Length: 219
Image (cartoon, one colour):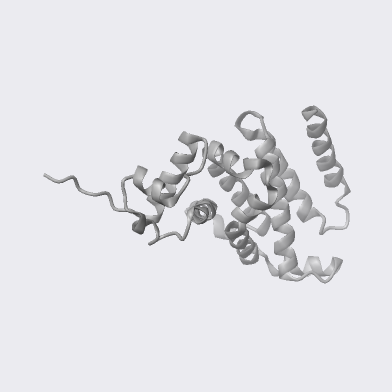
C-alpha cells in the first residue's frame, strides 16, 4: 500500500524551515535541497513562497497574526483602552517570541547585520503600524496635537521605533523568564503615554534609572 503523501501548506513549510535552521545552525542552501530533505517537490514550494527569504519574513508575520488571534479570544479585549491594548499586544507577542527564542535569536543576530534584520521585519512593521492605527483613539490624537501636529503615520512610526528598542532589549535579556523585558515594556509604554501629560518627569526619571542600571550591570 502506497504511503499517503503529506499535504504541503504554508504553515508546514514554515515549520520545516524553522526546524532545519535550529537543527543545522544554518539556513538551507537552496529551495531544491530544502524541498528534497523534507520530502516534497520544489514546485510545491513555489505555490506559497518565491524564495527562502520570503519564509523568514512570513515567520514574523505569523507571530503577529497569532498574537492578534490570542488577543481577540479575550472577551474583554475590545473594551480595553489604547494603553491596555498595546500592553496586551507586547506581552502576548513576546511570549510567542520566548517560545521560539532560539530561532529568533539566530535569525535576527545573524552576522550582526541590522539592515538585514530590519528587512526580515518589513512585513511585521506594516502589520504593527496598522495595529497601532486601529487602536489609536481620538483622545490620543487630540493629546498628540496639543504637543505638535502629529499625524497618524507619525504615531505609528514612533510606536514602531519603540517596538524595535523593546525587541533589541529582549534579545539581550538574560533574566529568568525575561522578567527584565516585562519591566522594560511596562515602563516604556507607561512613559510613552505619560509624555502626553503635563508632568511626565517621574516616569522619565524612573525609566532612565532602569536603563542606566541595566547598561552598568551588562559591563
